[in-house]
Image 1 (cartoon, rainbow, N blue to C red):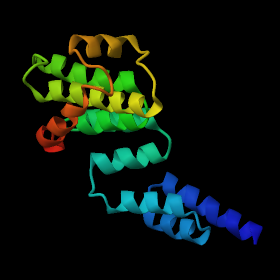
Image 2 (cartoon, rainbow, N blue to C red; image 1 turned 60 degrees about the horizontal axis):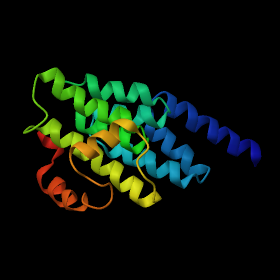
Image 3 (spheres, rainbow, N blue to C red; image 1 turned 90 degrees about the vertical axis):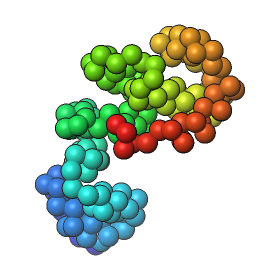
Image 4 (cartoon, rainbow, N blue to C red; image 1 turned 30 degrees about the horizontal axis):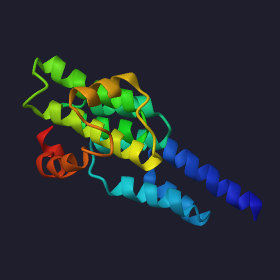
Length: 172
């Protein structure tokens, strides 16, 4: 029985490595790896394209490559890249992407979507710190919070509603 489970697990790994999600799903079902199975099903349901490729690449633990896929897409999937960095707790990288995108386009940070992306990163960071009941310890974030007169977790709650209403991945 152990050899059979090992064979199914090996098949699942090989199938994922070769992007054969249907076979991977069958193998994961056989070994009752429910969490992995749900994730593979979610990826399978995604429409073809850079987002799906990036998600599968991230599942294969190649985060840097997954991020590159999103940023090299035409047009770049900046929102998705920022969101991926936040999910991976790569706060400074998320902020850099949001800021670099606006600088590359020659757009001032105020009054454009990248300004909102920067605010979105700040909001996510604020929520994270609030959940952990910690103070900001990253210099760049401290500066930005101070520049905007924001105390993470306190005054930033108002921004949540504004970001939800105003920010849409379709704008990126």
